[in-house]
Length: 445
Image (tube, rainbow, N blue to C red):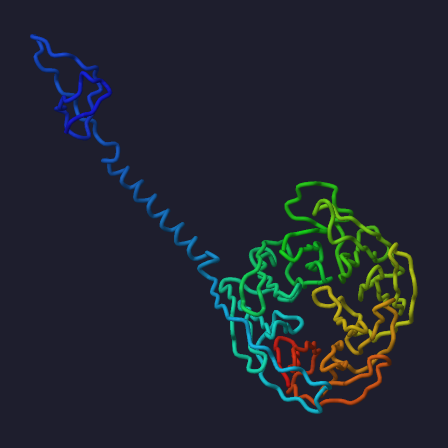
């Protein structure tokens, strides 16, 4: 084989050295005494020894094992999806609540605290799967499934579905979906705690927790974090990182939270902004010690915050600066106030005319203008919603159709819920009424 050199004088010289050997001695021109320079001895390959071949084999095995582990734990490998075309429009809802209603279908949906119905689609969420269903038949139109992860919670905001999955330490994987087609619109990693719920103020969503609250914009970019921040980069930015949290509510780009802090003689109400110049440096509107413990934020509206003080048997409304605006007697059964609600959020709904709060045994109507109590209905199973232009509240055996102004019962509608005795959350979608019965969602018409 010809050896190419950078020396023109050597051009065209054919080497006598075999391929793979190298003469390490300086080039010696031939002389009479030494007519031919002895060829250099071939150097043994460093990979010909048995020990070296064992090392190479071990490296190959390690690489193969690592590749297998990566493949086995790959999110893409364990994610399956099916998209759908936008659905056909639903029939128009009736002008009044029907005199009787029949169950169309039901499906497991343990990860939806409240039924999700929008874009002419019902969204269910159970185990690892989020599914978009036909409201009239329950047939799955699209699905998004993380086979290696379990859902923490699924809720709706900004006209989209937000699915929060449990991974490693907490509820850290968030995928936002278009409810009509199942298309992914945004994704993020977060720091939400196990048992989290999503609190929506119309512009931002906040995850609840005992030690940390995270707030996101509609593109899932974090706008604020409050509490004990993991992987802390900037010290002394959080006002009280050693507190634990009770209930959380939100409105008008503000979050209200009950704090229980070391050294405080009672619970504390804190209201802070959903955005600030730095996401880890909350801008607190006010913080105030309350008159007692076991306090609960019930609702917020504009600059007002309604708080229940069960030990004092009072419901108190606080203003924009934390001052008390009004107080109302509120004596609830001990079972209603024994513990904070699951997920740190009260069961409330909003209509164009009012806010409705389910205490655990009764429904209380609050004014949207000043959060004052307007009327109470005993023996209910959940808060009310507007369905077919009327206010309906779940009761044992069916629905109560109410006068929204004074709470008077206009009539009742029977519904067969089988043996299920617990709380019921409602959502209306066209002519279909959705009921969340614990881990099951039922569609009625």
